[in-house]
Image (cartoon, rainbow, N blue to C red; front, side, top):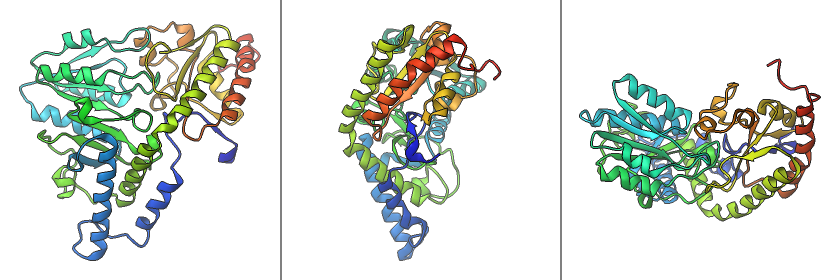
Length: 389
């Protein structure tokens, strides 16, 4: 199937590479192939490109260029942060995070416990909102790190990161923001948020896969995760991925400039939700009462399996997710929906629609027109539901 035939509504999983990003990267794969550490002109070109990209991403996230460490993506950045904090503060063995963090964070929570550390998971209410009073009670003087996502990848619910930072700093803990889902959709400001550490992935905002960053606030000292050469001021060894870094920088520049386009995307999302609620009975929009990302709709259709609806939409060239793309294949409701206390009948029938800059009004209307019939067929048993999977 050609990409032009697709209706792609899974931008929280990954985004298409922006053509301008691709063109910015192209020369660095071919004639400008020099190692950035080399002393000759070809190397100087690559080094200069990295410097420029560092300025572009720093402008996007609201920090200084010197605070940026380029990585292979959000997962590496999180590993650097968690493991670095563990080693940097041997007298503090307590971690505070939330029950709805991305699976990459949940894996590091298990690692932290395996090292002998203590972890407090702060829950959310039925709309996915973080309870700041519970968070404040959870943080104490032995807390090394408070890790909170800026926006949930499934529900799109935004977290009060500035207030969470105040709580963390008041108890002497470092504060980490996972901004992976927020960047390109809402303003990101590491300084205003009070972040000591901040991570993101390029492929979430029309940049290349395999790129990302960890912002380490000036004055915070963490051991590097990747040992090797002196690249990234000794904070991440290894020859730099110059094409990827250039692409990340260009994507950051475009994301900042095009942030106003999210107003249009929000309108399309709201239209889709209004149509779903008006035309289909027994539906819940998870997190609808909370402040959310402008592009995300997490809808639970009672009486069906979300995977069945996903497959029926896929047959028509419509790409959606049943939750976090990093945990597909799991039949049980996601940890996010469980933390939100969603009833099983809605949780099992949940589908995530995540729109992007390329989403059009006609695409939204087409999806909204199709959904009532597909859901009705699945509920009646004539939709070949996925009981065999």
